[in-house]
Structure formats: structure tokens, C-alpha cells
Amino acid sequence: MHKIAIPPFVVDRVMQRRGRLHVFDRIDPARTAMIVVDLQNGFMAPGQPSEIANAREIVPNVNAIGDALRVAGGQVVYIQNTVTDATRASWGAWFDNFMEPGLRGRMIEAFTRGSFGHAIYPDLTVLPQDWTIEKERFGAFVPGSSDLHERLQAAGIDTLLIVGTATNVCCESTARDAMMMNYKVVFLSDANACRTDEEHNATLGNMLALFADVRSTEEVVAMIEAGGAAALADAAE
Image (cartoon, rainbow, N blue to C red; front, side, top):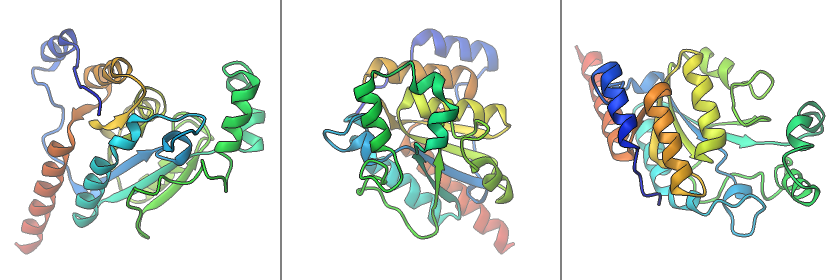
């Protein structure tokens, strides 16, 4: 598990800017989705081309948040990094320049539909009511990447809990765009993972400063349970 250490200068800047550390005090579970970013075999299974070993350690936290959110009436969404012929043709800036040919071939193979690498990691709890959505860019909200935004809007969801891998790539990209599309974003400090603590903590600092509330699994589960209890109390009145 990552050793979490948000830089003190970020905390100081946040306190000067808004006068408090956390952005959101409450979660309305009925309007909340947990966005599980790229927790697939290709990023998690030993020996895979983009293995991030730390991602295996966050599975219990992701499952705990999902369990609490489903009980309270929220939505769990699994995002799958996907490479198609159309992806390769339309995103040459990435595929043609940022990977040597051998790795490029292994990555394409790993994240093609139907491959072992494309599948969701088996230790994750995936239930029939959960959504599974493919994306074709780092961020799920980039035009042409996925239909996530449209589905969230149709479901009346305005709050997103971001978990997954890699913290500083697809998770951060998705969270940044989500906030700028007017979602309330909570970024989980101990349910995101990347290769090093330094990269992980740098993203947590960016999120806390400008894009999201940064919370632990324990805090978010408590907020979900409190929100669910409040909704039940309101319904009983």
C-alpha cells in the first residue's frame, strides 16, 4: 500500500484558499457513482505488460466502498481500458511516439476485447447491477473515449468517487475532467495506486489543491453510510 504523504505546502495553500481541508461534508448515495478505473488484469496480474503491483493491494478497499455504496443505493461503474483499430488510428500521437514497438504490441494485445489483460481483475466484486464501460483514452470523459458522461447524466448522478490505477494517469485524467464537467469529485487516497509513492502523492496534492476532495476509504464509507441513513430518515417522515 502506498505511504501517503501530501506535501505540507499543498495543505497550507488549500487552507489559505478555502479555509478548510475537505471540500464535501456529505455524500448523497443515490446521486453517487464509484468510478473504478482500469482495474484489469493487464494492469494488475503478475507479468502483464503494464503491471502495477500496488494496484493489487487496493482491491479490499475498492470492494468495501462498492459494498457500502450499493447498499445505500449508489452506482458502481467499472471502466475498462480498451484498444481497437479505431483507437490506434485516431490516437497516433500516443501509440506512435510514447512506446517502443515491442511494448506497443504487447499493450495492444493486452487491452484488446476478449483478451486476458482486458478482463476485470477477478478479486474485485462485480455484481449484475454494476456498469461496465469501455474507454479508449486515458480519461473517461474525453470526447470519443466513452459514453460514461451520458450514462451518468441519465441516471442523475452528480458525485463521483474515483478509485483505480494508475493514480497519476487514467485516474487523475478522469478526475480532472469530471470536476471541470461539474461533477463533485472525491479522490480516494488509499484506493488508487501507481508505481511509486512519489507519483501517487504528487497526484493527491494536485487533486486536493484544485480538483477533488481527497479522502480515505474509511472516511468515504462512513460518509456513504451516513448519507444512506439520512435518506432513510427523510423517507420515513
